Image 1: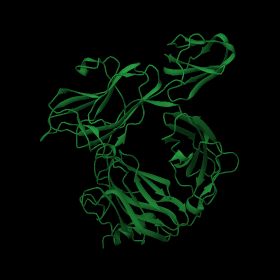
Image 2: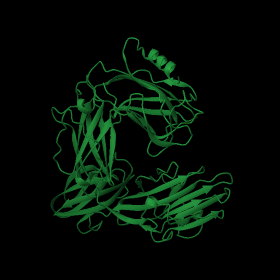
Image 3: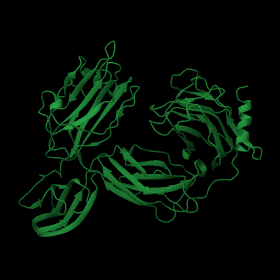
Image 4: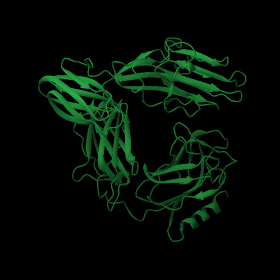
Length: 534
C-alpha cells in the first residue's frame, strides 16, 4: 500500500491525466533500513536492476518508507541509478527532501546528459517535487540522480515518475562553442570554452584528446564513452552544457596534446553530433617536470621529515599499514582513551628550489572522526630545528579528505613564490573535547629544471631589472634574431616576441604580478631566466 496513493498524487502533479504515464519507481523493493551508507542493487518496479551507491534507508527521514537517503561527502559520490527503461522519456519528476541542515544540490542525468539540478536551502524535512523536467529522449534510457559535489547535503528521494517520449530525438546543435582553449599545467591540461547557443543548444559536449594532430570527428548514432587513460595517446570526456571547463589530469611531461570539441544532443543510438564545418580545436604542451623531493614513508620512519610537539603528549607517528594502497604513512591523533589538547607539526627537510621553476607541492590525506582540519604551511625562514612558531609560516590552500578514511589528493599547490630555500609543514590541532585522526602520504615536491641548461648565461643573454613593473631589458649577444617567450606559472605562453642582437626593451606592463619564466631562443640554444613582475 506504500505507494499507490503517492503514485496517483504524482500523476496529478504532472498533469498526467492528459499524458499517458510511462513508468514510476516508488522504491518498494529498496532493501536498506539502517542509517549506514552502503551500496547495492534491487529490482525496480519496471523489472530492471537499479543500483544505489553510498545510500542509507534511515527510517527517521523517509518521504514514504522505504526511501533512499543519498549520503554527503562520500567517495564515490552518492547516487541512485536505474536500469535500462524502455520506450524513451518525455518528462521526468520525483519527490525529494532535505533531511538535515546542509542544503541539497542534486544532479539529474538521463543517458549521462545533465537534464536538471534540484536544490533546497534551509528547507529541512520539507517534501519538494522537482516538477516536470523536459527530457525528450527516445529508446532505452537510464536515469541517474547523483550528488553534485562532496559538500552537497544528504537528500532523500522517492516517487520517480516519467512519461513516454512524444517529441522524438532533438536535432543536432546549431552552433559550435566559442573561445575554445587549452592551457597546460603540471601533469594536466585545463580546457575552457564559451557554451554554444543557437536555435538548438547542445545538451552535452564530447572533448577528444590525442598526442597526435589526427583527431577524427565522432559519428552520429555511436556514443563515445569517457576515456581518461591517455597513456595510449588518446582520450575522451563527455561534459554537460553549462560547465565551460574541464581538466585532463595524469598527462605526461613535456608532451604536446591536441584537443577538439563536438557539441551534441540526445544519447545512445540517437546521439547527434555537430560535425559540419570545422570543430574548435586547440593544443598545448605540458612542462617538463622533475621530482625535487618525494616522501612515501617507505623507509620505516618519518625521516627525513620530523615531528615537533608544541602541546600535548600525542605526536606524529609512522604507520606501516594505513597509507595509500595499505602502505605506510604518517599518522596523527589527539585521542588516547579520550581527546586531548594538542598542537603537533610534521616538517619537511630543507628544500632547495634554486634550480627550478613552476615549483608545486602535492600529497594525499585521509581523515576520520570529528575535529579540527589539518593545516598546511610553507616557510622561508624556519631554521630546521626548534619551535616552528618562532618562524614565519604562510598557509597553503589544499583539498583535504572529507572523512571516512577516504584518501584524497591535495591537487597541485603552487609554491614558486616563497623563495628558493623553504620548509613545508603539516600542523595538527585538537581540543579536550574532540580530535580527528589525520593521515598523510604520497608527498611530492615538483618543479621544472629550466630547459636542461643553466638558468643564466650572462655571456650570451641577460634580463634586467627583476623585479619590474613596466619594462624589462632583454640582452641577446648572439648573431641575428632570437625569439623571446614568457611563461606564467601554469606553463602557458603569455608573451611572445622577436629581439635583435643587443639590448632590447619589452613592455610587461599589464601582466599579473608574480614569477615568470623568460626564455630566449637563438643560435640553436635556449637561455632561461626568472622574471618577477610587481
